[in-house]
Image (cartoon, rainbow, N blue to C red):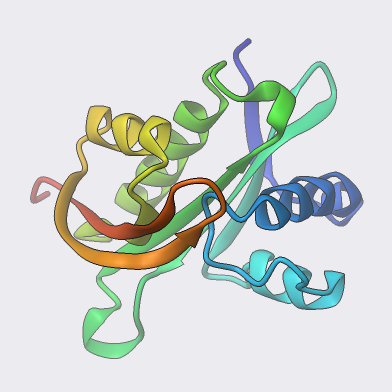
Length: 166
């Protein structure tokens, strides 16, 4: 399964919302309110330019989504960030890797010096391993700062990938 990663369009929202809703209601990987209303989720997930929201598509079906942009405004705007969600039935099939590679490539093309993930749940070992394979390092962990429904209070990693100078 090699997904096509392309920019989000309005017609993608129903499929993206289904993924977002499933991920946040599981309360295992994102520190978002599981009762987040659809309108709030849409405003939070769909980036406005110069940021970008994309979808991963396999056989005409949206199986993942990502959003990317500057991590902070002003003096921190040279560092990018991104978030990724993959549909339950598509996990472990390269969708997250394709989305991560797309986001890193986008950030490099747009002149960012690196990419920072602010809150990677440490028990989300698949994501942590994927990000490490793609060049990210854990630069710190906030202990017991995420309430996981199975593992209890676990840490949130800050992960960073500094890009080579042009």
